[in-house]
Image (cartoon, rainbow, N blue to C red; front, side, top):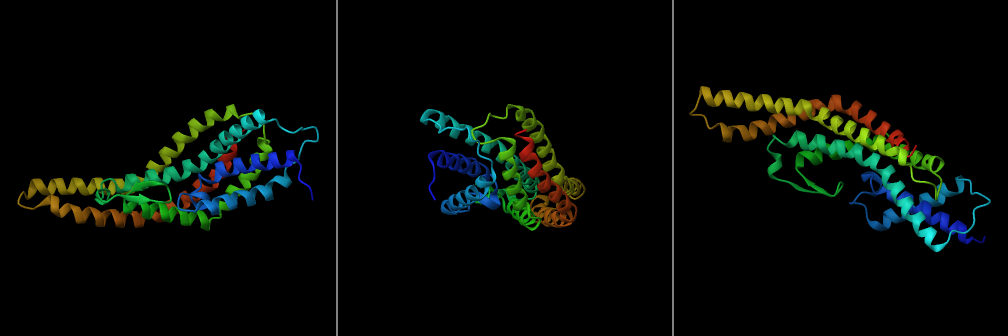
Length: 252
């Protein structure tokens, strides 16, 4: 079977868009996944998804300069699509950081390979639990389906979706508020703990409130996060299920 130059160009354009998307999904192409695995996954998806896309019969071989412009456009489109996945996991990271802010875990920040940023152990517990929920709910399948539908919304070497910029701004504010809402129960518990310790310091000045407060806040934060999971799990499910819809919303 012979492969024409046009088919090779379309394959590389599809591969470029797919790679620009999956690197934003920690479960598919995060920083902790080797580059060889990410490239192999991108090539496999391009081989699977490209034959399902109709190839225009009147499309000629793309010139060198135009092909370079087409690659840049696919990178922009893929980054815009993957930004929806980035927002979902970014909201989870915001929630984890807000939960651990006053718990005493912030003093021991370590590198989180899943997100490529440093964070406390409290953050990583929440992020890793959310990633497990993402896989259990088949979120990776929803992302792949949405990725396939993006080729119908924006064909290869198509125009840039300038109409999606307004949706990006609205969705960013929505996910930031979602992250804060998920962290509110733990933040409220820690605030009440600080208030109680402050009143204790006024009532009994001889008590070393500072040294007493460190282990107390750690215990309160862990208990509050455990109780919050019962409420957060359904919320995470809706967050991940809407992520695939948002990926398409950005390019419409």
